[in-house]
Length: 208
Image (cartoon, rainbow, N blue to C red; front, side):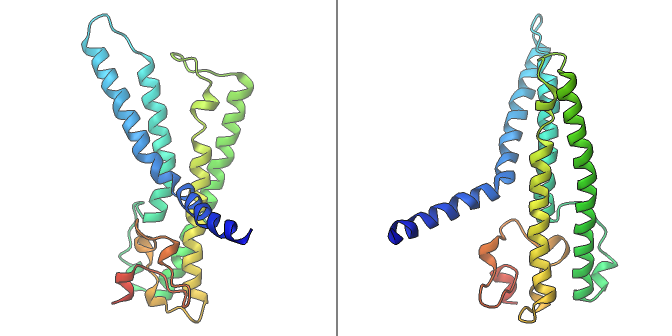
């Protein structure tokens, strides 16, 4: 019984790891679909008598899905546009607290967006609003906003945990915590945390 449980544990961890990176997997998939439909649209416009008006709708909705899934990946990698000149002049602990404040403000902003997004989806569902060309229900076409915001909150919590561990735990030297756009690089994950000391950052950074 214990042997089977121990064998299933790595599988569960592997599954959860892939689920936690679903936003990363969605980006190349959505980009490939967008490129394919875009080629169809260009082909339809260049051939007389061939009309594909639905391609414009698909492109619009795919681009919207890319944006929402891109929010979470940008949060993790610090990919959003920002000016850090004055922040970089502050002590490390002050930078870390400002990073925490920034993530909390982003969370509040996303909560407002989530409220209006859910309200809009409910409106589309009640009115049975559909797209002109494909007659696809709008609440389905606009639904990617929901998993996009969920993953964005997941990335915010992930970064807050790393930051607060570096600020509050005495065993963690704040110099090892990567701040601002370097909090969690693309390769960083929970496996990069030293379980004994709680240090945060890549192996290369720890060796500095």
